[in-house]
Structures are given as structure tokens and as C-alpha cells.
Length: 105
Image (tube, rainbow, N blue to C red; front, top):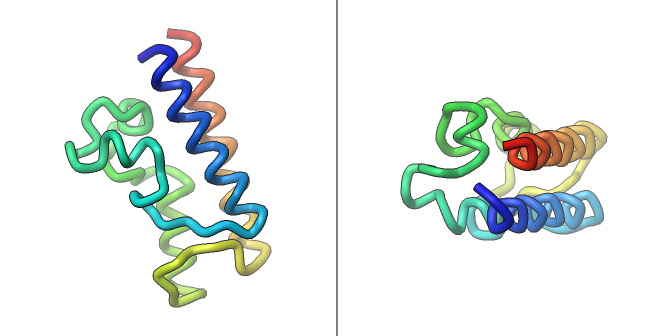
């Protein structure tokens, strides 16, 4: 996957740091990985390669979406409570792990 993929993952990690600091999650609109892979069923996305699932299923992001919809009833997702904060941190940890997996291959 190489340097380009690590660059996209780093941009995705930065997105989540921004979310932790008051930014918004606009889903595929502001996700660097989704911008490249979403409309092609996530084929070649490093997250799909790891989970074997499309659209970030099986990741902390799935938990994030469910939490946002159930507890915050908004289409613009942001850190609104301690649980949001914890899930956003889990997403960063997950992306860092994916980055390490890519570096090892």
C-alpha cells in the first residue's frame, strides 16, 4: 500500500484529532480514506483490508455513528459527551494500529 496510503491514514488521524478538539465528523465528506475508496465499495481501503467489511463496519467508527444517532440525534457528529470522547480516541487508536500494520507489510 505504501507511502500514499500512510499519508491518507495520517490525514484521517488528523481529522479525528480535530474532532476531539471541537471539529465535526461529516462522514465520507471529510474522511480522506472515504474520499478515495467509499464510492468503489471501499475496495483497496486499508480499513476494509483489515476488517474484511465495507464502510468502516467492525471499527470504532460504527460505534461512533450508532452513539451519535441514538444519543445526540444530529446529522453533524461531534464530541458532545464523555462517551463521544472515548469513542473518538478509540478511532484514533484503531487508525494508528492500521498504520502500523501497513508499515509492516
